[in-house]
Length: 214
Image 1: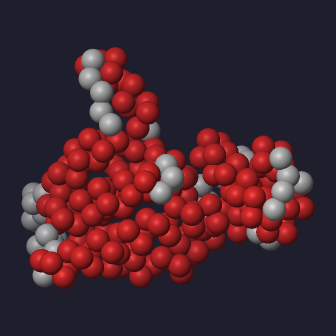
Image 2 (image 1 turned 90 degrees about the horizontal axis):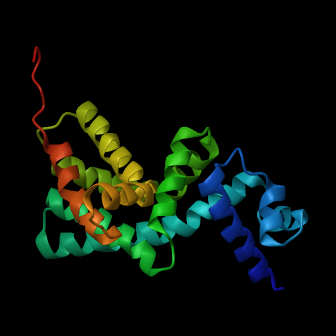
């Protein structure tokens, strides 16, 4: 087995196990057993469990941010100032759907992202900010510019409300879609769900800001 094969097997096993069980609940021994490699291979190729977690996220975030940055650059060139709907379509249709075309499961990405918020992984936040902070600030800044009537604190909360709805809807997509089939006799693909999610996110971000006393 080549070193590249070993690295890929470790990353593939870690990605699935972290998404299913969580970061703290998944041991390196479980990962190496699933990958069919020895424990020393993780230390040799990654150094530690924290760095392995970061490498798992890197496989998602690099193509995700690359697609998002390219689409934002294209929209800016073509249309000048960006509209809110265009920004969210870039986030959902281009960046998330683009993961699937590159062999990365956006639903699993959302499960991992949700775990990053709910489990204590300060090292991961520092890694993401250091490596991908420019992309996040560029996107968030474009959103804020498109919402000049929303004050910074309200914008902060609405942004996280929107991200929370996105993470929950996609990380739980299979279960939610199963309920849809059972209760309504209907089905929805990931692409159709993303198309429905974008206008809902727009409404969440653009709701009137209550004035004092309301």
